[in-house]
Length: 479
Image (cartoon, rainbow, N blue to C red; front, side, top):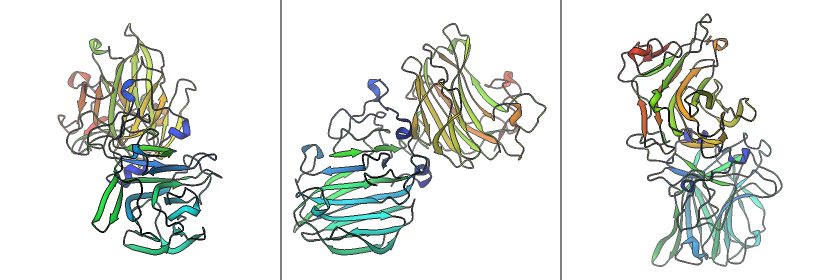
């Protein structure tokens, strides 16, 4: 997998938790998957993406599954079935209690079914991962422990091979089998699955780099592969090369991991060198430490936009990111977007409907740099998109949902006012602040890595000497 485990840890989608619809009404948000079709929602595909797929079991009625049927024309395979062959895939099976919190004992499966059908009686082979144990289904339809183990949250390099009457598999350097096949008909269905139809699972299966081969006397032929990089983040794969896709979502960086930022959402411009440290240690000052970039009056005409910033927090208070708006008369209307990264790693948003901080279900490591990105269009629905480290967290209601609202400023502050003074001596650190006048991040309004300021400069102290408002205090350039 091309995604780090840190990225996976923060990539838990809240779409199933909040019932988000990733097709937000714009023709630009329709994914055209490989093989054609109208797409499965989500954001547009991005060149040089670094994506993977998440499979959950968030419903009692259904089971999370991603299945390919080789005989279907949309699968774009060169064979209808595979008498002898193998597959390789990168898998990570990990906790996802933020979504369900119900069934810790659920299994993840790789199922190899034949042309005879999709029941257990027609399996060429099946692998099950659950509670740290590696199991397989024998030809009496029983799950049998192999004696092998795996570690939840660690990536597993898996290979599954089959002949006409046997199957075997390997996980990393550990080999299992061969085992007798239940059905000797040619293989037609290959599935990745989580949980069952009796409960919901609080685990998820992350998959990447799926490859399927057909083998004969002349050698091995690659007949199907997918690294999920040609789909947009948030795509459900409901209209793709797959026969079934239930509780499935494409996640990932959505962009190249090399080169410049290009206005994207991935961790491509990780902070280095100078940054701004927000200190809030003085209880006598009636304000929160803050760095705020305001557009000039003549620029406050952009009713859509995108903003991103890296935040690191070793303080005992929250980091709060804000987009503030004005109406058509340039009068202040208040916060368009407000996101709170708590000191314990939990991430909150604040919708207009309830005007209370609402947990997203996503957590971060606050001691590390985390890239927060939002994009919005106040004339296109009431919502905005929230990303962390390039991964789509969800689509949430704005704090101000009226139309024709333009951007006045973006800001990061410590806590929510003078009552939130930092008492542990820590700081909220900020770097690589960027603001754009479009949702894709190509029309740059402001971008700053703070390398141009002298160490010790207080960006909140004197607006005449910097690009920043005198909006708070103790926004100190450090290295």
